[in-house]
Length: 430
Image (tube, rainbow, N blue to C red; front, side):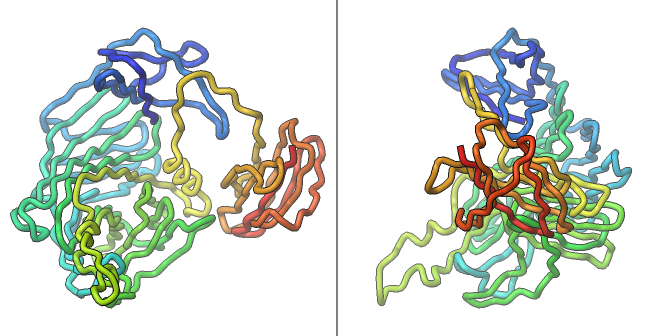
C-alpha cells in the first residue's frame, strides 16, 4: 500500500500502470491544491521501479455504516468485532485463530502506571487500566479493495492524572492481497507518569522470539528492576516480535516502536504488549540545579498528537523458516513515491533461501558499491549474486570496507557460503 500526492484538486482520480492496467485505488482525498491517492502497487521487485500515470477515474465504492455489521475480511483473515473492540482474528490459511478476546481485546489500549524518568520506571506500581470500556465503534467502512473498523477511545476522568488525558482513534484494516492485519493509531496524549500499551492476546503458549539486528533471538521474561538504571520488564525488538508454537507463529510488526513485553497466562494465552508512549515526570539527571539549569523537562512527557502504525501476521512454520524477517523489513521500508520518470541502474540480484540483501550503499573511499548480505535463518547456506554489467571487480571486505579479498566471478555471478547469522560485505568496483 502506498500514498501518492498529486498537484491539483481532483474529486476523483485514477491511475494506470505501464501496461495501461488500472491500479487498485483504496481512497482519494483532496487537501487544498493537492490530492492524496492511496493505492496498491503490485509486482515491484526489490531495487526496481514502476511508473503509474493519472487516468480517468472509475467511481470508488465505499460504504460507511454504523456498527450493524461488525465483521471484516479479506482473502487471508476474518475479523470479528463488537462495540468495544475486536473479538477475534481468524487465519484462513492456517485454519486457526491467531488473536482472541480474553483478559484483553485484540489491539486493546491499556493505560499503565509508570512512575519514572526518561531512563527507567522507578516505582513498582505498574497497575493497568484496560480501555475497552471506553472504546466505541464509530464506523465500518467497506470498499472493493479494503474493509475497515474505526474506533474512538476516550480515557475516563482523571486517568493519567489529567482530565481526559488520552483520546485516540484506532483504524483496523484488511486489504485485498495484503497478507497482514494493519492498524493505524492516532493519539492525543497529555498524561503524567503513565505508559500506553497495545495488547495482542494469542490463544496459544510458545517461545517468545524477538527481532534483533541481522537476526532473531528467543528471550525469557524477567522481573522488573526499579531504580535509575533499572528495566521495567520490556525487551527491545527491531521491526517485529512474536510467539512461536508448533502449529502457528504470530508476529506483531512495528514501525519504530521497539519496546515489547510478552506475557504467558495460566489460561493458555500469550499476550504481546507493545509500548507506544510514555509520560515520565521525574527529571532524573535532566535537571541538576547544582551544576546547570534545565527547566523544560516537562517536554519529556511527549504531550501532543501522535500517529503510529503496526500490523499482525502469522505463519504455519517456525519464524526461522518463515519470511517474517523480510516482511517486517519491507513493512518498515515501504515504497518510495516520486514524481516524473525514474531511470535506475541495473542492480545485483541475490538468489538464496537463507541470505538477504540488508543494505546497498556507496563505498567510503572509492568508486564502488557496497552490498551487505546477512544469513537470517540461523542455519547457514549458499547465496549466488548475479552482477550487472557495470561491475569490474568483486571483493569481499570487512564491515570497515578493508582487507579486500578478491572473489571469483563466473558468468557475472559470485557464489558464497555463509555461516548461521553471518554478515558478509561485498565491494563492487565500477
